Image (cartoon, rainbow, N blue to C red; front, side):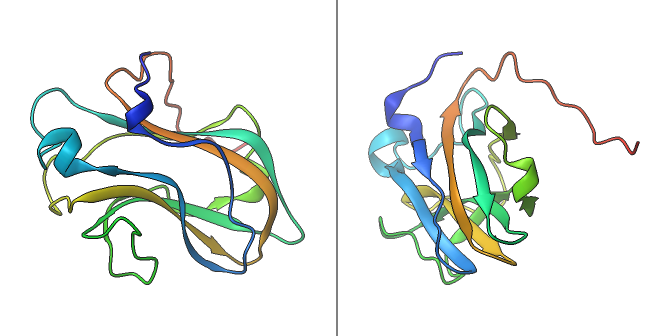
Amino acid sequence: MILDERLEFCDAVALNTGAAGSYLLGDVIDLQLAAGGDIGAGEPLYLIITVDTTATSGGSATADFKLASDAQAAIATDGSATVHASTGPIAVANLTAGRKAFVLPLPSEGNVYERYLGILQTTATAAFTAGKINAFITLDPTGYRYYADAPN
């Protein structure tokens, strides 16, 4: 897999340890400079989020990571940013080092991408006390396997 530094949102970026709420993590990508404003044309792109350092919490924290865009670089955390993809709530017990938390082809249709693209962390139930993630866009998610959850 080829990784472009300019398409990397988070490189071992710490989870926000604040109370329940939404937070912008890591860097943002200026789509006007990167792709002339259109990332939906050409080859498919993939968002990949992996866990770098196991997450911990004093309670039963959950994180919902969202790919969001906004007109300003400080992507809004109040719900007004455009959300393009979401992991859904992930329990702290499932955020273990080395885990691939999310692999998704970027939507090329639907909500129009605004100028700045970034990752939002929405924490619920309890705050995180530690943990780090990696999040990036790549052309080649080779090696990542998709398995449905199976009841035991």
